[in-house]
Amino acid sequence: MSLLTNQDNVIEVSSLYKHFDQVTAINGLDFIARRGVTTALLGGNGAGKTTTIAMLLGLLLPSSGHIRILGEDMLKHRHRLLHRMNFSSPYVDLPQRLTVRQNLTVFGHLYRLPGLKQRIAKLAEDLNLSQLLDRPYGKLSAGQKTRVSLAKSLINEPEVLLLDEPTASLDPDTADAIRTHLEHYQQRTGASILLASHNMTEVERMCSDVIMLRAGKVVDTGSPEALLARYGRTSMEEVFIDIARDRAPQ
Amino acid sequence: MSKHDIHYSPRRIGAIVLRHLYLMRTSWPRVLEMVYWPTVQMILWGFITLFLKENSHYVAQAAGILLSAVLLWDVLFRSQLGIALVFMEEMWSRNLGHLFVSPLRPYEMVSALIVMSLIRTLIGIGGAALVAIPLFHYNIFDMGLPLIAFFFNLIAMGWAVGLLVSGIVLRYGLGAESVAWIAVFAIQPLCAIYYPVATLPHWLQPVAWALPASHVFEGMRELLLQGTFNTHYLINAMLLNILYLGGGIAAFLGYFRAARRRGLLLQIGE
Image (cartoon, rainbow over all chains, first blue to last red; front, side, top):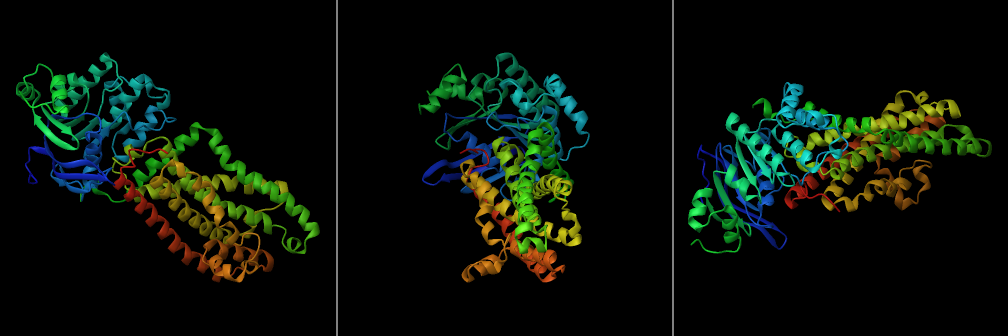
């Protein structure tokens, strides 16, 4: 795929490779994510989702290939983009001994945000964290930590939000509240979301586009409706299993 | 250039410093630990000095020579540790991934580590130096302006070693964290802390003179024994420190880039 620079595309990845010694983690990845919608990045364990997200964020350097985000070359101009992006993952922690408020204050300063106190208060209200603001992050439950991590990822009102399993370990009620919040955030700001998830209900509800990975390559793309029709299935879970097991569309 | 393209932001540096000040505020044992070891060392060497004053011509010439050496050596050790421990704190809390998807630049992180090292060293050594005044009637601040020169040359060398150590721990994981505790002791015998460089075998002396600390301690001895401040030592130490600090920063940034190649910023562990 040639390197696109379409204004409608918020993320453009082409010919992306990542080798770790003898292991090829990403094997010629090409995809686009459209502006203002939520795109799912799906695949089984080891398919390359987290590696791809790490490269999109600049935490990991690709062996070769191109990444454009918001029209900028991510590999050359990472620091022009980082203040317009953010990221949340249950697998990356925040300092345990700092309170929620202290953690959010530190990240607010890192993004050089004005009106930080008000912004933290608003985020806490939106994500039902007001009662937790002065508690140490390490003393929170897994679900509370996920909400704090999400608050951190929204603190700079990012135009591009990368979420690695944002509702993992959450109860259905809290997970629903998080999804609703993300939907409202997207409606309000027009942000683009790239979501890596194993929760197919979440994907069907939130995502307009799906990118399916296997062994570091894109093996299928389309809207959830298009994939359901192509594979002759009634749920994305079945489609996921078909693709993961290399079954051809019916 | 937009306001977001700022290459060097004091506010971002301040954010990292604030994060560690918050941590110090919530954990008084951490603050106590900063003062504890330098004070224990100072008390031990204070009593040794009292004994040797009666039994050694060398120490009798300048009673504070050993205590000054102990306190100044601790400046180097604590500043190195101040860099490495603060950086490892981010690794222990698995926070590097979040930090480096923010606009924080690696050299801003270096600046924040240096500020935190300065704060920690001032608390630790300052505390021990103040305790020495009533306990042994020894005031290191009597050295005057040369003390500032000695202090900044030793702290700069500590920063260089600390940045190198932090880079190694980032590259090789927390399994290598013991390097932070032992690295500086490998060069301690060559730093001429308690004895002149001339005491070392001839073949080792050039190695000793390649260390900024050796020039500082030779200068300190000359000041305390002869009452003269030899700027020759100071200039040598400063020139060497420019090389050391440049090397330390380059090593840290090099290891940081290697960590990005290997995906270590998201997978910190042993």
